[in-house]
Length: 388
Ligand code: NZQ
Ligand code: ZN
Image 1 (cartoon, rainbow, N blue to C red):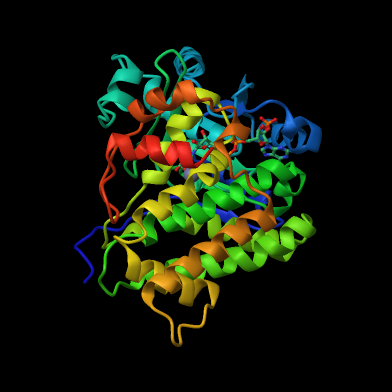
Image 2 (image 1 turned 90 degrees about the vertical axis):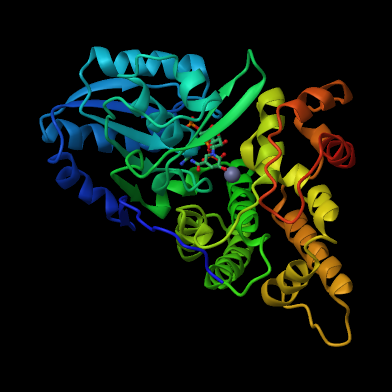
């Protein structure tokens, strides 16, 4: 049975090859001062930076640049951006990049006018903003996180060895996002497949919970099937527009709050993965792929029926004459062989994890209990060991 919920997603999306054409119209809704946030330079290489600056200038905007937003953005960088945004009376933050730049821009948007310590308030105490929020618009260049249409913002505090995501309310969602699949053609293969696994993991975090018949789970199955088909094409030909556009759209729906509605959700793979990220600064999707299989084996018995359904409905395993356990195991095998096929990391060692990090990673892992089984700290350590 679907639980009660409210559904609202205020982000306006512009999708497709000509979607940048909508930027000028969007800009008319905001004052003159634009904070242009971006990463380490991929948008300059691709020429996208020049295209955007041209539109901003034509619309008479003043541009304050904030380059160098790193993958897994840090609290120090957030403090720098918050000050810059306030000092320049920013009217709109325009984020150009992947999940890191989008997440970061949302964090800046709620921090510029915040009088409290923003790490403590938003990431340790998980409080909602009480100050003025600067609007954010995104131009997405890397697919996976869903940050373009959600309130998620993940910030890393290296000093405290913590990587924490705050899922803000819809007042913090991007006001608009521009999604041109062609912008993703230049993403390096490693980042691209990490993004593909991130999408799969987002869907599984919401699918692997509950035992009821729930419309949302059928949507999740459809999204996974589309991702599997298109990812197989994209790893062979990254410039296949059909595949890349399907994946871009799937990524957005995988984490724009829809498939969490009316049900509980798990998110434990992300909790372990983020803590791994805090210790290694590894690519987000790879921290998930490295721990997923060991985690799923730990919860398999508790969620046997759903894992069996996953095998049949998502991977096309023939259920005839097979027990739920046999099906569940075949489903995990199919998942593993797809992960090998697209080329994601399956070992924590490859990400730089060493045995002396186990305790710290376990301490930084939030134990949520929304899925089939609430882990203990000892089980997190077992999962880390099995993922090496
Ligand atoms: O910095 P540049 O030079 O732009 O290079 C980036 C970066 O090195 C590169 N890249 C992006 N678009 C490119 C490109 N290179 C060439 N051509 C392009 N078109 O890719 C690298 C990775 O980018 P990043 O933004 O870090 O990747 P992703 O989109 O995976 O974002 C990861 C961050 O999002 C958080 C993660 O924890 C991590 O911090 N997440 C956010 C979520 C949310 N908002 O709901 C949920 C996720 O589970 C995730 O936790
Ligand atoms: Zn993720």
